[in-house]
Image 1 (tube, rainbow, N blue to C red):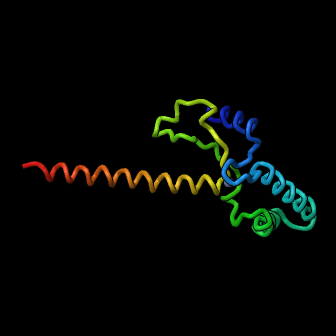
Image 2 (spheres, rainbow, N blue to C red; image 1 turned 60 degrees about the vertical axis):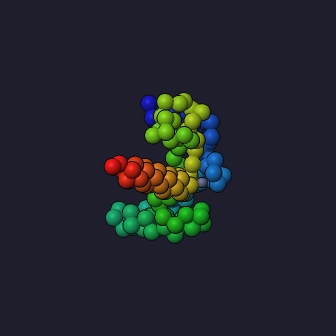
Image 3 (cartoon, rainbow, N blue to C red; image 1 turned 90 degrees about the horizontal axis):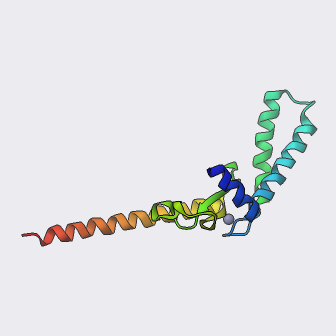
Length: 134
Ligand SMILES: [Zn+2]
């Protein structure tokens, strides 16, 4: 089911981040093509292990051109506009949006901070309530 939803979101959004507008899917395809090209170019001249390391390094070299600093920032995430814990899990496609991994990380961080804030508020409320007890 999640992969079906992801396919539907990809069809609708084409892997474009709604936050920053980066074409995450297109960008990753472009990066993959560059690596393919480099692989073909070097295949005959390097052993398999050396080629693998070379391609890893090549990826790190070309990422900055795509505005990325590490491979973990590639890709896109299917994001729940209304968080699952807020009841957004039962909604359909209209609650799902495309975020690039970088924007998704930011949002997750922000949500974690908000959760901590809520917990803190509940805790301090609990303390003031118990403080009123005789
Ligand atoms: Zn983004």
